[in-house]
Length: 23
Image (cartoon, rainbow, N blue to C red; front, side, top):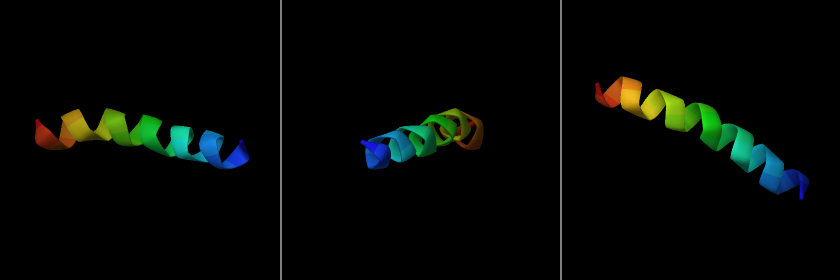
């Protein structure tokens, strides 16, 4: 489960940065 949590936390900031990078 720890792996899932790490993946989720990594995807969260990534999702926030995607719209910013794509503008």
